[in-house]
Length: 206
Image: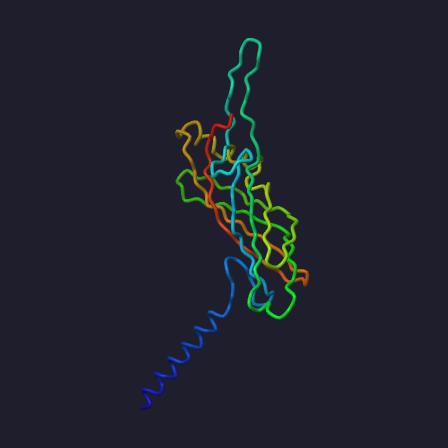
């Protein structure tokens, strides 16, 4: 009987611990939601090259039109790789019975990782942003820099040019981790993270 009672007590303790462990309504990257009363999520993260949605990142400028006796060669124009992020702000259970706070987006950081044998390290990208989201609403920010032009140049200088010219223009895939920081009107910090991927190579955008 004593052994049975101990077993039942252990089962009850495990049940209580499981409830406590699952009590946090934390969602994808939305930290401290049980205190702030908000559930912030990124519902869409879209890389863009030359203004169009694509995972293909052009890192090498080649000749679009060869030179003639009277006209110089026309080279492909290079741009920043950008991204569009859509945020959604839902009320968490802890927000019930009170006015939920407005949320102000402050900054983001993008980091890059790859397991490809010929991958080259890419420095993180951080920038300030400005946007307000009200409870139950969504917001899209477009034109955010994902891989600025200077990092494309740096990629080539670090050995990426060899991948284009001597390794059959191999496409190198990178996982992109984007973390966005925000603050409520009450001064509470909120953070959300999402992922996407990009392919680096010489793509033709002539």
